[in-house]
Image 1 (cartoon, rainbow, N blue to C red):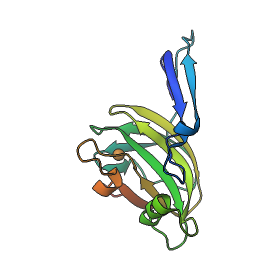
Image 2 (cartoon, helix red, strand yellow):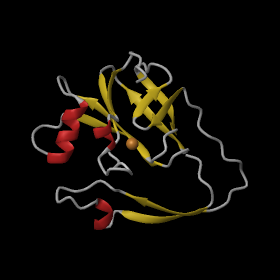
Image 3 (cartoon, protein in one colour):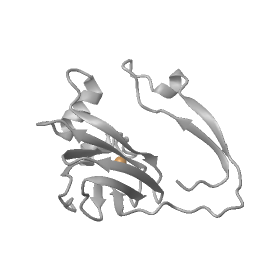
Length: 167
Ligand SMILES: [Cu+2]
């Protein structure tokens, strides 16, 4: 990502089994970004993922292999995207249920993504995809009603090699 000089905090906002976010257990640290004489250069992306209220849109179908995805938040709220490789027969809704209740076998393999990104923000994510089915989920609470964005429809499934439909 391209950072401007200033004070930052690096933190894990994921809740533990007791519901308490890891940041409350000490998983954070301060970070100072100092000015540089070199011009900041954005990574070269081969696909663009647009986040809106409340959809994910990919600029092109993703094939198996490595990709650098430019993630743009064109919504009016913060958004994130969690990328999960789905286990056979499992859906992104099974992943949400597993994260909320933590019972049974994991329904997929979390591959990272982009943590909360402000409206108008851009970030880059490096992925290495095997053929298969994947889920995209935004867990952030809505500014208007407090419900998670996936409850507003910001949850999507795609197969590597297939195009994501714009909703
Ligand atoms: Cu969202």
